[in-house]
Every structure is written in structure tokens, then in C-alpha cells.
Length: 72
Image (cartoon, rainbow, N blue to C red; front, side, top):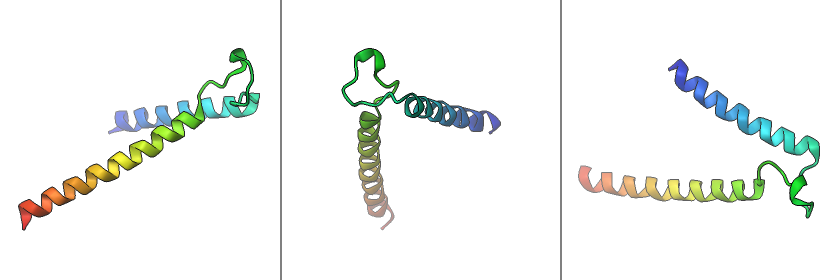
């Protein structure tokens, strides 16, 4: 259990660090040269997160329907 907690904490710290670095250095996606591009393209991350949530909701609904068919 501590290993899982450490892994999750490490992922959160890494993402927070990249976001903080991008925010403090002013490296935003605003037409700057590629050398000044942000470390992470947060628009794409947001799109992927939204798609992940939609897929998860759809799969959860499918699972609920399947369970209801089997249970009664």
C-alpha cells in the first residue's frame, strides 16, 4: 500500500512541477518560438482528460446495464 501511495504522489508532484514551471517562466502557447514552447501543452492535456472522463462514464454505464441484465 505505501508503494501505491508513493507512486500516486510521485505522479501528482511531477505534474504539479511541470505546471508550476510552465506558469512561472511564462512559457504558454501564445505563438512563441519552439524554443520557448511550454513543457506541457495543457490544452491537449485538457482534451485528453475530457475524453477520458467521457469514455469512463460510457464504460461505467455499459457495465451497469450488463450487471442489471445478469442480476435481474
